[in-house]
Image 1 (spheres, one colour):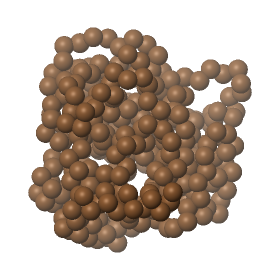
Image 2: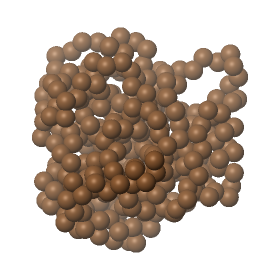
Image 3: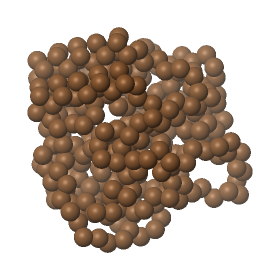
Image 4: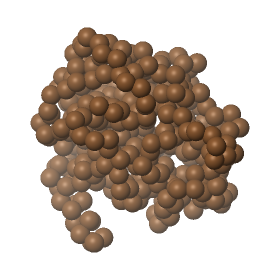
Length: 329
């Protein structure tokens, strides 16, 4: 079976059982932890001054595993309650959705490190004034630029999700904090039977050089609250590196505007009883510029979302999504 982002044959290994967040069990090779680096120095290398446009037509694109030097992982699973059989299917088409506002200095690095076998890149431009869209086209000519009509990260992601045409959607930040070389881990988790591959900085093998003490404490409190209210077993909550099958969009139905979007998605995934696998991920420092995140303001928005979603039924979320889609059509 071919695996996203790699060219070599995967080695066989004796499998061990690992419990997913949703309570189901997968069999994952013991090689997996070696592929999930926890030390900053082991994370896939950033591109230093080299971009696709600069390399010229004679340079052969490398796979993500060749870039990052990561070993292979073999995985097996039994069909989930949602009837997943994607692991035996052909290679799924992967859409990478990138919300961006004034990220012209960061995008060349992010786009250069994308796997060569990505199906499409959808960049949602939130009215940037620094030439974000033009830079994206220069360094990734095939990029699809989507204009954002509303405001905020949630609105941007919703616009990107609606425009994506792949089988899998990967959420990727434009500031360089998320390593595109980790994308194959998320794709592999989905092909191993998950409906939603949830990035986690606090799962074994994950980490962060960017999170502050205050944000870390706040995230820990909010994670515990969600785990109690929604009977989940999440290790992270406010992290934007996730992937899911496009068919799950109606179950998620992003209808918020701000940075609470990751929390909203994680809660609705749990309420819809989708099968979740946490993928260890390392969050790096932003490359250039300042974040639009405001710790206390956005923290309260997250808390409000946690409480309000407790009283919203999952079928009402799907009905709202169906109504919205009918309106678009």
